[in-house]
Image 1 (tube, rainbow, N blue to C red):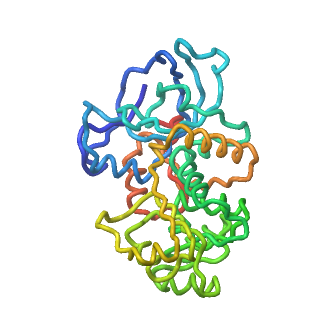
Image 2: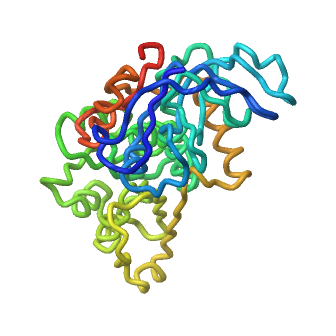
Length: 328
């Protein structure tokens, strides 16, 4: 089979290449999936650049959409031919979805509704599950205000939709008018350009001075300033899944205590079994309902995986970046 891999960390054009690898076989409890579309996420390019490598080669990417073409011992043959979306394919293992085939535990291949295409499927593992878990951790948000940091990002676009479907009024930060339009298409009522406006002041203005009831946060290093400046209402929640810097956060303890703030951190790769079950069930229901919009910003052939990684790193694509494995 054709596959992309790297053997050392570095820039995409220096370390990524596409060649032949043996086609994997499904082991006990596993399914083999013929990949149609592989999602490229920011975490994939960060892993290629920085994450320590403990295997001879790494086939990147955790997300994909495809069709089960082989089942291992202990897996029902009824799953043969099933359309699926994949999660955590390359988490703590060297063989991800930037290949024509992947074998993985059958629980990581989730049934895909017929009306959802494989590009949309390739966006579910990291962006979809992260958005679902972030919204879930905000609690009951019906009739409340939710601020989505990075509302035009892949996760932000899904989070805005999910929060809107739960009855929230969604505000979102963006960095351009094009991204504002993209966010509004996902249900964001008011966008705030963080490059030209004070986000905290604008949030307070839009909420009558109270602040948002919840913040869905992709960059804790800057959101701490927003919380300190009153962008989060008393008894509010921050659901955080990332930070651009790892220095100790500067949120005054007294502020957190006297306003009863809740800080929720999570790593989507490492949800508890109970959390994972809820997220998979909830996301599957949303997919079945047909209410989720999938924004595919760019598609690349496998041979152009370097360009795909560079597109994600540059951050100029509106929507998700996917690799078409049927066009190698």
